[in-house]
Image (cartoon, rainbow, N blue to C red; front, side, top):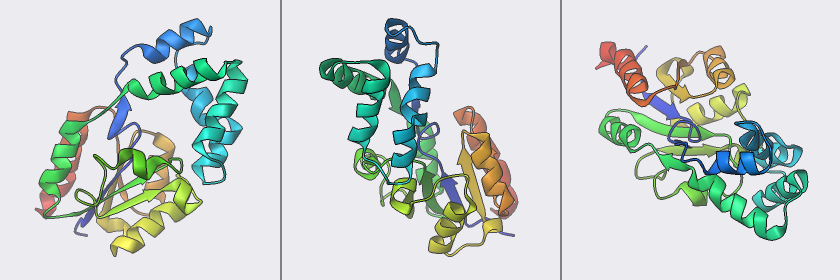
Length: 202
């Protein structure tokens, strides 16, 4: 079946940690193991609620502050430093721009309620036909429903879509409803895999 749509995760794919060292600096300061800070931020109970729109980002960070016993001042600094460690993948965004004339494009992101506003400089209606955020939908990956809703709004069948994500459970979720899926590890490799899947249909 002809590929008609390409869908991308945001965090970990289009927007990812570039290891500038600030998160690791905080981990050493707080006596955490490498990667533990991100785990605390994204998997604490309030964060899980925020991912489906049942808590605010401020409430998530308040919970992080409690877990790590941080003063309001230190928590504010940590919050700023945490996101500073990330950058947009302009190479992948440029590639998406190059294929947009021939394919429908979109994002499916497990993200909090402030995500749409925070990413609008790079992820917007100029580049993508649809932006789906779990907090707005009340459902997150890898629940099949979030993939089905996205595809339905684009007017394409699962077999007509490619999904790119950095987390294997989300890849499996997309494959289970019949989508092609690419596990994102490195930008050029992902672009090559997309081109390979599109080549028979060009």
